[in-house]
Image 1 (cartoon, rainbow, N blue to C red):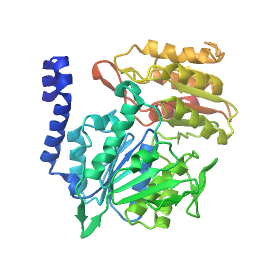
Image 2 (image 1 turned 45 degrees about the vertical axis):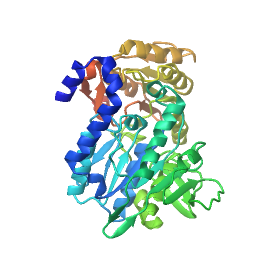
Image 3 (image 1 turned 135 degrees about the vertical axis):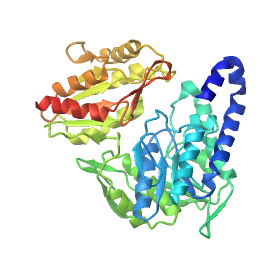
Image 4 (image 1 turned 90 degrees about the vertical axis):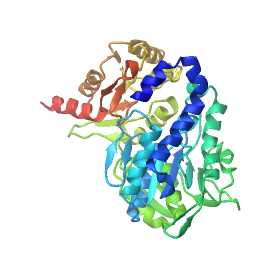
Length: 444
């Protein structure tokens, strides 16, 4: 609170010039106050454009199944090694003091491993700078956050800085064992080699191809095959059937298996842990209150992820799809708004556009832009296109018009615990709770 007041007292132009110094100093103060907790346990970072949160969660479950105590921070959830709870901060990589403090709590709770979802925007603000990482995972890269970074190259370089930091981190010996600095990367991504170039002791690349490279350990897996109960694939010849939807989750699962192997966990043991995962909060999460149609809540908020989501739910063979969506304000990519509307307009029977996270932008302006994209595909307002500002009413509308065999898709927030409004105000929210309430009303 005091720091916020001081920042407001400093002229904006001067503060912008001083920002790098400010962020660096705050990072150092945070780690100093918390006693350098990252030096006392293995720290795994996960970065990339998509899949980060899922990889964090799956890695934690795989390691826990192997008997390790694990804490983590992610977009969806936090864990201090004893308690897991939903992320209510509306941030992926929360402020330096919060991050260092939860790492300190992990140490106090006897964690062997901390997993930190690490973002490019966090890197620009030195939020990663005083975390002593041991393993860094690259999930993949495509254009996102361009408005905040200025260009794709800037975005990519911010990601690369995280790996450069890993290479510079001090080596650790924990419980008498040397911990190797390791990069784990999705080698099927076009940019993978850019992230494998850094000088670390160990490199693990996972791929669906027939790849040979003496500089790294190769983990090979087959493309995921979706079915109504989950996804099936093979990893280094071992068949895996997971309960979570989405063929892309084969890639996320193999990333988790690769991290587990990097930390000395036997592959089959890690796979056993993954096969016990039934769902992920706000990621293709099915909400069931006994209705005769399917409701899915998902975090997807940008065009590539939403398109993949439609490909995933195709396996459910829906009679019709009803899509509740919006888009975000706060300086995020404005061009995505109409794109999202077009995707929903082309692929869903009914499109319901609503409020998501307007920040200081006009919610109606955002809703209108998304709706314009749906109109381009032939959707007609009042018939198969509805503009409903209140998100709870939008969700109620969606379930009220759903019929047997339909899929109601609610995207943009997942398990987020707040809607971000004007002047930084956060309004308590949970799509999943709202869905359950709407379904219960429907049964009365």
